[in-house]
Image (cartoon, rainbow, N blue to C red; front, side, top):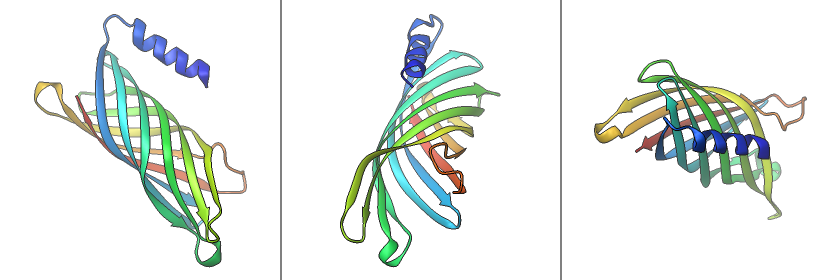
Amino acid sequence: MKKIVTLILCLMSFTASSEFYYGVGYLSASSEIDDEKFSMGVVEVTLGNTIDDSFSTEMALGYGVGGDEIGSGRYAIDAEIESSFALRGIYHINDNFFVNLFWTKLNLYAEDYRGRDSSGSGKSIGIGLGVDFEMSEENNQKIRLSYDIAKCSGCDDDDNVKDHFISIKYLF
């Protein structure tokens, strides 16, 4: 993991023809474990680097703002995202439509019906794919809508876990 972050930071800092941009947005992270569905919200800040007309990289840090109850009755667990970290490589098909490859890690907080909690456990989603649609505004400001999907790499093989991410970001 440290090698990946170092490689991306070096790539971002040593590219002479690059253009940095920043962003803020909201991410809805939804998961399906067998038939159980739940979702949690994250506010993200983004640092991006446009390397050329067809490729860019992004790094995003997030803070959880909403949780959900997983299960029901005495087996219910209240869960929320404490923080998140994501790396993304974006290929620009044209000025408005992109595809991306991403890796993300979520730090979760969970509490059971008896009040026992578990904090700081990282859930490595692994690598996923997504599509982005961007609308340009004045002064190089943009609004981006994204849909990403991944299969949980840190989950048991018995679980049929799919993670979906829908986000809206304001880039400047």
